[in-house]
Amino acid sequence: MHDGSGRIAVHNLTKQFGQVTAVQNLSFAVEPGSVTGFLGPNGAGKTTTLRMLLGLVTPTAGTATINGMPHNRLGSPATVVGSVLENEGFHPMRTARNHLRVYAAAIGVADQRVDQVLSLVGLTPAADRNAGGFSLGMRQRLALATALLGDPQVLVLDEPANGLDPEGIAWLRTFLRTFAKEGRTVLVSSHLLAEVEQTIDNVVIVSRGQTMYQGRVDQLRKSQQARVIVRPSDPQALVTALREAGAVDVQPTPDGELAVTGTNAKQVGDVALRAGVAIYGLHEDSADLEKMFFQLTSGQYAGGQYSGGPQARGQGQYGGGQYGGPQGQGGPYGGQAAPGAPPPQQQGWGPPPGGAQPPPGYGQQPGHGQEWGGQR
Ligand SMILES: Nc1ncnc2c1ncn2[C@@H]1O[C@H](COP(=O)(O)OP(=O)(O)OP(=O)(O)O)[C@@H](O)[C@H]1O
Image (cartoon, rainbow, N blue to C red):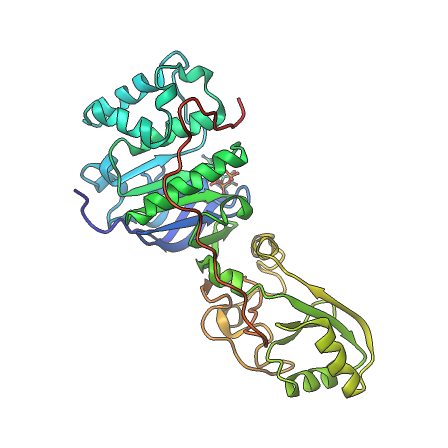
């Protein structure tokens, strides 16, 4: 059956296209049994990385392996890894079934597997229709069915949610989670965190060809506790008063305000009043994951004011700095951050936010004749 674990390992991977550095010294690992999002804005180097992993582009330096081996050394690649890259082409006059039969023959898979994969992706009702008339959602399913022909241990999907309607995205989410629960590996790229947030367990965030964060999504989410932003007359006095009141995470913002995590505006206002510190502005800032993603990838922090090795590697931009306070443990977000990542947000006072909600259950496929949307 499958050799090895289905583990993906990318180590110091670099790709130079002439003057363009598409991928720069990228390292991350993807474990079996999980869905990992590979996230970054357009041009971050995602597709190039996936193409190197799939043996379609030769790295300038570094390695990208599955089961410890580069793609060209996998004995029977279709049984190890299936992939859906962008712009998969189908012969428009060929039926879905015939398309799959051609690919099945190419990799030495019996025709009965064709019916299995059609069923797995919910395309059985459309099996004898020409692919040229398929909606985008149906084409995505056909591409996925093709990737599944070899019953692979690993699935690599480049922007699979592109153009899918909400129903198609929900279906894909369930499918990928089911696949991963079987102990297989899923790596799925996207430039939109919101599109895959509910699907993925782990995330690798890249920007400008470099890893900005890798770790669990729920850790990233935990780091996103609501904050109170306060503009006091005397920041140091208020920091002291807040710490005496139990706040452990008080940080100055670039705008000269204080960000107090894990509390609410009333608590901060009351502390300030007791300390005799005037407040010129006070609001609650419910930072969300999308905002964090934007910060990690916007370039504002890469090489900018928050760049730099040891601080960004987990000791915190402000930890032990201007206002003291406890140091965060490990990476800023509980995962691993690379140089250039924004400052850490340490555990605040008050209850931590809830963990990630498990996605809905297994294998809901569209019924016969049911349309799954997507754009033609
Ligand atoms: N064959 C190529 N020749 C020259 N430059 C390339 C080539 N392929 C990619 N690039 C460049 O490498 C950089 C990374 O591109 P890549 O497609 O890997 O990014 P991406 O994160 O997948 O972006 P998108 O989401 O837009 O597909 C871009 O600047 C791109 O223009």
